[in-house]
Image (cartoon, rainbow, N blue to C red):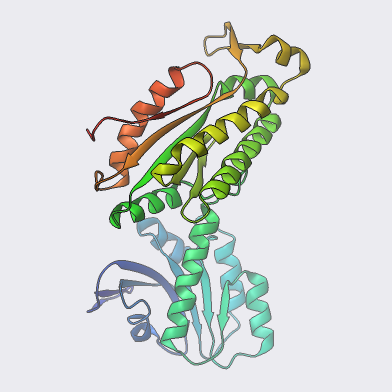
Length: 327
């Protein structure tokens, strides 16, 4: 179903499933009917707006996937509109398309300079417009969900990847890796050294997974010192052992020579008392999805939390495979 949300009325038109929210500002014509066919497999919800402030109010009530500025006659307002939208924190990351059939080069350049993500000057072709819309939305979601330190996919992409494999009935292993004593290390050396260590760790995990599971491996970065990688079950031992051995060779050299030879650092704990923390190690908790054991990522996450806690109680770097049935 397509809902057109106007200041004065709501029109309903039938389509298939899902929801796709479009913010629409237009002059000199009406492309609402065209938008009903923009995403064939979705219920398109069109939010009409005339000002950036009005769009801002609508966005606070309902998430918007895509913005379209449609122009047929007066083009004088469009540059300012784009600039106002892109200047607002809540709105600046929404992909923005300009639909201006017959527009000249100067308008195209102006729109792109102001921050438009795409400018279409041909008459409406639903196949092309649909492909552009989905490309812009997918690219925005991808770029916003990339960790700035590691350049690896973030939590949303990780959840999507796990869910995709669950739904296809694939047999796979989810491995949750994080660093032991990283907070103490970060407090002791500072965030610049901490961030560098995170980037090195991400490089180790990514390289090992790419080398040993090149066809079906996946690596993501939840944030901080927490990583997730997905591999075939038969690759668990070689991948985890290689990650651990490489990390353990690297970690001591992230310390000063005196600390490295001593094997620990003294850092105030949360109570303000000095506490001894050993050299960084890495813990990997592993859960295997087999015989369609799990129905959604949340079930795996629940079991992973307990296994992760237990694995981190073990001395040194370790990996631990969950052997219990789903609970």
